[in-house]
Length: 103
Image 1 (cartoon, helix red, strand yellow):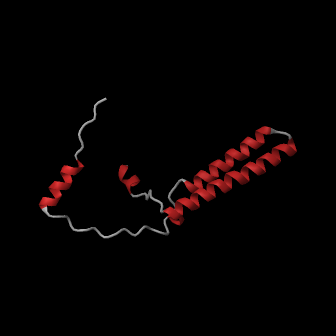
Image 2: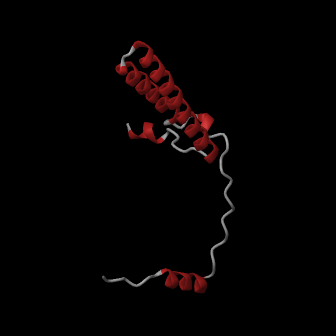
Image 3: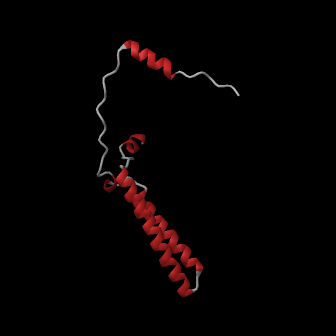
């Protein structure tokens, strides 16, 4: 069962994150305006809430999964540099050790 979930892509690139945020905010804004106007016309605040919640659900379905449209611009990483020699590696490990601080 867990192997099914490991095959689902969970990453987005930065442009995809921006697009998802814009879609989310746009749907919420439009549903809030439509819900407010419709609720004002029929004088039922409950319908305003239903329309906004429906807009929220639709925006979640469109933006929370990592759809392929959010993964069109993958990052290009720099190539891995070769590891330093033994002496310099030991020095860098010593430099990264920090003493414990007591309160």
